Amino acid sequence: MLPSALPAFARVSLNGSLHHAEPARRAPVRVYHGPSRFIMVGTVDAICRMIDRCIAEERSLTQQGL
Image (cartoon, rainbow, N blue to C red; front, side, top):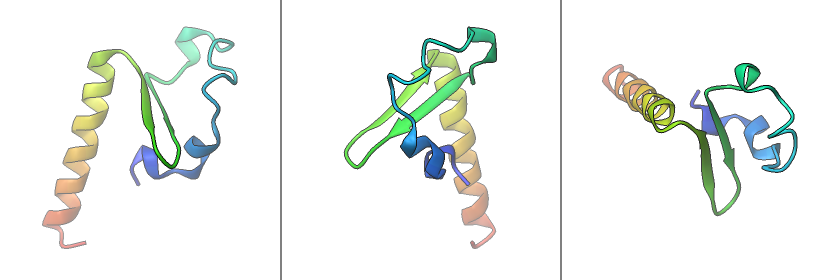
């Protein structure tokens, strides 16, 4: 399942606990989305790696015929 499809991400507020966690304990990329927007927070490299992993997963599922 892709990170953006997980229901927990839809319930996360951009303002809630974003600055309270220590940087070392935060996920490399945080994903927030609502009905009309999709926000990824992290370094450009971490976001690119996450997108690459999602694309690879989609291709793998397509090749398996799922």
